[in-house]
Image 1 (cartoon, rainbow, N blue to C red):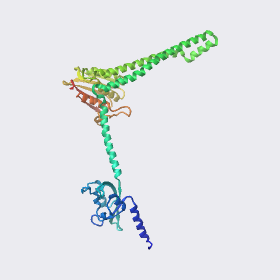
Image 2 (cartoon, helix red, strand yellow):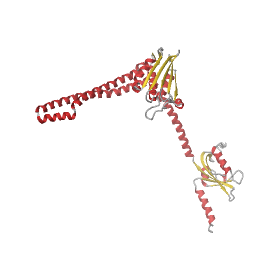
Image 3 (tube, one colour):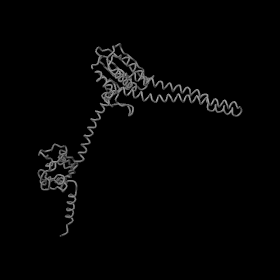
Image 4 (cartoon, rainbow, N blue to C red):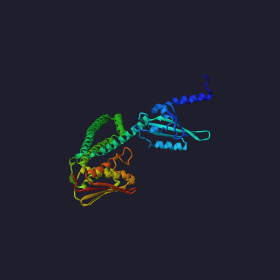
Amino acid sequence: MLPLSPLEEALRLHSQAMDASSCGITIADCRLPDMPLIYVNDAFENITGYSVAETTGRNCRFLQVRADGSLDRDQAGIAQIRRALQRGEDCTATLRNYRKNGDLFYNELHVSPIFDANGKLTHFVGVQTDITRRVLAEETVIQERADLEKTLNELRETQAMLVHVEKMSALGQMVAGVAHEINNPISFVNSNLHSLRAAMNDFFRAYDQLEALLTSQGGALRDAAADIRAAADLDFLRGDLDDLFKASLNGLDRVKRIVQALRTFSRLDEAETKETSLRENIESTLALARAELRDRVEVVIDIAPMPDIRCHPAELNQVFLNIILNAAQAIDGKGRITIRGRDMGDHVRLEFEDTGCGMTPDIMRQIFNPFFTTKPIGQGTGLGLSIAYKIITDRHQGTISVESTPGVGSTFIITLPKDIRP
């Protein structure tokens, strides 16, 4: 066998390299009508199932023929490649292609132009990569994300409505649990304080007796005892400890009263509808919100005489408390909350106006959405106003809306029928 020339050796090496590639490689002749394929490598045959004889001399559009014989040519990638062919540019696009047996596969096709010595376009080289697994994995992720978002939205709606179960059972369990959890530590802290107080009294009596014994000995022992008393300031400590015990026991008593106020506010024995005074409900709610209002927020109550209405009092108290607390938190420094109430004939109208920071139109559009909050992470759940919306609209057939001007304040407007329909 005669030795190969350098050119023949290079051509043989190039051919072997193309056949060894895992990517499908094709060459199309741009000088001929319909740009037929004049070369395909072994990988192209493996990917598509088409042999060299079935491929050469044909335009590659046969790869867009479905199993039923219809064409799948309405693809953005095909239009992208067509523009590149017209301009003689490189291009990479993803196509839906079909194997000889009709199976769909996704093809990442990179097309590059070949020019002759005069700069005229003569051929296009196509490098094809089967990315079916990657595309299917991406589609699966997209579908799973959509399913997750749907589930999350359903979960949000469900969670937001947990407080609206029939007869306020969820609120009843919560308050009972809170009362139990608070009362238990209060009981042993209270018991321990009394025991500690008694022990400290015993300690001081024992010290007094010991000091009296040392003093009766006279001389250096008496002086040393006096110095120890003065250095430790025992007389001050005795009086101060008594004050500390009194203040602590008073604080525990206040906690007990707060728990009782919470139970009263929730009205666990009044979960069914009943006729109630909205003014009394609002005033009891303000009593619970007093700590947030303190001395910096003035509350003006402008409620005209109106009849009692049939409603769910505990649920309305939740709405009032949420709006009042939000208004107080929106006020930087000193400000005012004005609560108005008017009898409008077949319904009543309540307004909660504050002089806080106000809201932008974008925030107002989302303010009643579950989990929407303008507070920092960890300081708000975004459930308060969404629950308020459900209570007013679903449970009481009323309406709730907000008007706001940034830098001026906000006004929440509630309308309630005088007798809700079962």
